[in-house]
Length: 465
Image (cartoon, rainbow, N blue to C red; front, side):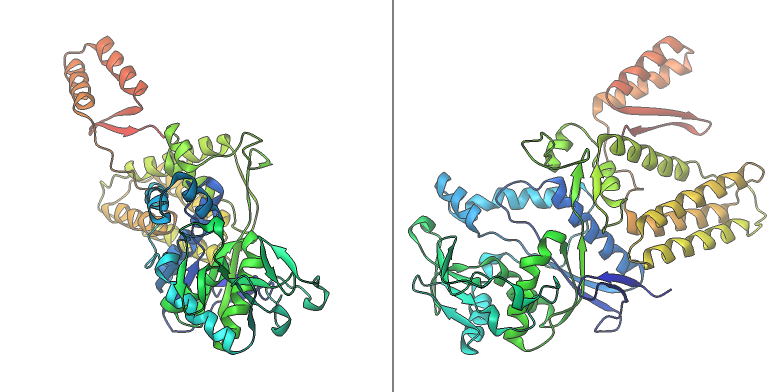
């Protein structure tokens, strides 16, 4: 089966064909850094990480750009309250975002352009739209895109532009425009903006949100690129506006494939502070909830289905991860003869893993394939010994699938000196056959989240998930 993605533009699963053979250029909508990111944000970033990793699994070179929105109404409001510049205000949240990415095992994109570093690119695009007459100025110094002059508007969200509401001059965010459906490219400076503005050829002010992504994506990926992703809430108006201003400005097709992930629910309800189910990632990590288990939950539901995040699912995810890790640790090869049976099992399930993900990233089917493979190998082991070649083949299989999942490897947690001393003391107690003391130390370590496993090869430890 060919690799296929559900394309929001066509409303079909389309075979994927990159513009340039062997290379994929993709743009992902990143954070607005006015606060710490919540788990709903990371549902989208995990989906995009799965997409990125699977494209690399298929052999593509991936160039990913994720924007950092570091100027908007919320940022200006909150920065002015604190008396900080917007760079000072946003820095801590931007740093925290990258820490959270690392905690969840999300691969870094190639480029993270910040909006405030790309004002000239935005100004140039706006100038081209003004020159073509598809943008216009208002008395307050703002510049708007005239939707009525772009007949293709609405093609991503499948809207009928003729049926969209028309109106007299209205105010939106205190900026005047000709019609309610027109959107801001540039916002003229007003008193509430305080010190946040740029003096440019098109006037004093700041960019609108939509123009940021068009300018930065074209700078790093070209005017026409392969994939654009985001949440379903980005389809309209954000992505619709990106398409309009980009294609009107360049005269070229903007993006070939549009992929959007569904919303995240928490314990069956929409996440909100009033409902008491609003969680930022670092709040969960502070509760000592394992980051890999959170990743597994956010990963394991198909991206086009609503994901219901529950703490029962986190617990189940931790058990699934433990099963995978314990399986890998249990592999021992001690015979010479190779029946080839293991390689047949692996080939079958690796093909299944790839075939399911080829079908619009069907992660549920892919995970099912992994655990079916483990079950079949364990059944084989009940009556057969693994050879060293078998073990090597299984480990290669696990590493291959984990290049996509990124849940198998145990984070490199070091023991403290005190923890190592306790383990050494328990080893001494066992050597002296002081089982009561050995059990006491085991229980103390368990209370610290360290699980000991006694095997014929010695005692190993792992952190409790």
